[in-house]
Length: 301
Image (cartoon, rainbow, N blue to C red; front, side, top):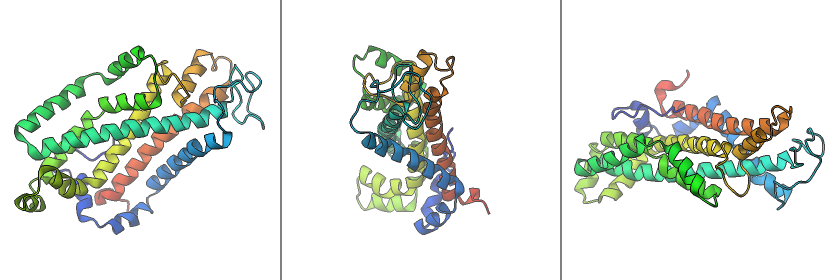
């Protein structure tokens, strides 16, 4: 679902923000419907995931609290499961867990990708060859299979640990993209001046190169964030999610396991499925909007 600009060294979309003032970008951002819709939907779902559990108190979302298999009504807004669990309570707690695994996995992957990509692209030579070989190895390893094995043999699994392992296995494509963009920027005049002034590698990278790729890096994080949510939901759906708590993927897994579709209990599987789709879809739409904001060639007249 990637809408990142072409990671070729001369990609105009990735380096366009360098010459564009922040005020002009903000001007187009607040007028881009895709960006506004995507950010608004993510913000609403995030607010529900953060505030919802607080309003419900400290109760266990998996607690048996009502009649079994009850349809949505004024008491139970999203109905109950076949065991009498409140689907709404599970949904709001699941939203929080879904956002958490996305942030943890996306942040870890983004940090590793930036460290590897910047260092390989700026230093070149043997350093680039070694890091590029490492990136290629991680890139061809079936990450989902590795995560399946790790999760299957872990006695206790948490959302944070799940996000950690997702981040450690999903950074390679982003590192390659950052490396390519760093190659195109390391020969610019302002980098040469910083090098002549005696600045070290990381000082040049984070003070000269990274700021000129800020929009590109932000869009990359959005994709890593959404990808982490999809991977986590896949693991949850096959029963390898967190052993404690609840997530949207685990809700789908429970609904499938206990034949919610066959029993006509749509309120059990529709909310978590719609929640995952809405989050990832909104992130994709927001990413498309950001690309239009940062790349003048994509702006609508």
